[in-house]
Image (cartoon, rainbow, N blue to C red):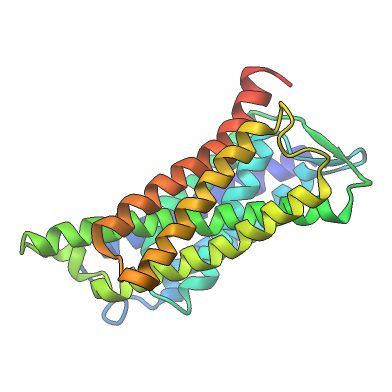
Length: 272
């Protein structure tokens, strides 16, 4: 079974990189989706990779003792969520270029999961509230990761347009107004999920401010406040451009410290 899963992993990694490479090649030559290959031709390898990645995750996460959410397993699960959401959303909205960065990261996460196994088993008797907390946390992080990469693309586009040198790379992107609208749509969905995550955490966990939880909780609340203020500013004052880009990335860094940072320190550095 182990060799079978390894083969599936290698194929998924290759397909992730293929899809990311096709998107990168299209963007490099400045071709739009309407004048180049259809989306399914570019994203098809990524879709197959996500399916195979799911098979690998099922093997790694589901154990007789319960759910194994060790650090590398959790990172792999998170990048799988991100890749899945990206690919699904790309058929409705022009956000597939984000895959240039995120699909190779999903491939890297799969490599780490296979070659650096980690154990942090949650019992099979997980309460429903805790399950909701874990699921919505992963989904919130996935959506807001998409928002962070979208913000980077908006920053590049804004700079090129401001300097009046829109090269092929920028010409391949949707209009700036559309890109910013998509960014705030992602943030809106992300903050709803993060609100659900925080509320379910306060309800299901004994103490969200216990010593082993306090850093995660504080940074998650900071991130929530940043994104909430940004959405309020967009509604009240029409914030956009550099303000939106800057605070999206600051909020994402806080979220990164909350989820990945705290788990990295506890499991890999401290070995808990």
